[in-house]
Image (cartoon, rainbow, N blue to C red; front, side, top):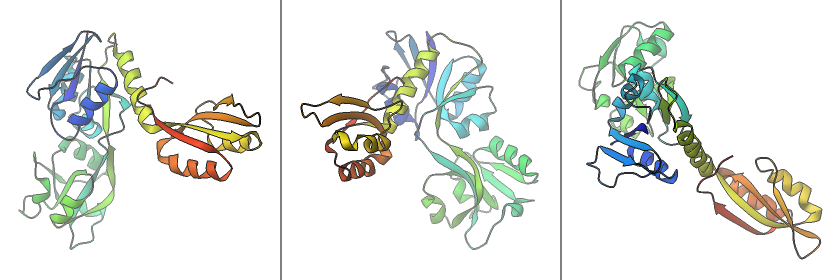
Length: 279
């Protein structure tokens, strides 16, 4: 039985539970539950603070876990990212007072407030910039106004919170983060199945199934528009000069592809969600 850590709260918690459910695993229904046994799948889930998950996995106490890439790197734990999960996307950025034009070189000698001191310290080292890192556990955006820091380094989703605090982003992203599956150095039984299931859900969320009828005279052009993963499935219709086509299409391209198919003569165009797959 493998032991897997799941975020117990925060922005990653609900999405982590959702992807595990879609992958066929049991999940807790009571937020107060700290441990859940899924004997049918040979898994024991532990619900932990997202910031602690990399520590538990890296130490070998747990075989795998879901956390943010930023939290994994900041922890310095000997755990390894093995799969991007496609949710919880954010960037990690520097921000300073909006009434000044900041450059990365301006960080030298400044106080930088952050909840990710390890990540920031490593980045400053890479930049060969000497600055003071001030660790805060929350409300980092208030630190400049309160005089605790000169600039901040924090996770940014929309940037609205920073603007409300009178701050603006500058410089290139320190890190692009998202939810990831991590593991330790061991080769636990069942981990490959977990990865394959989660990868199937991630892929299914990125694609849809597109079915349509097309005259044979336009089939080559239609296959160019919907090449599928290996090739589209083509079936004969009762009308001898028409065929039915089925192919996986990137979800984000669906409507544009439908428009193009209609233009070349496709009819009966149907879109179906994919809930899971193995490719």
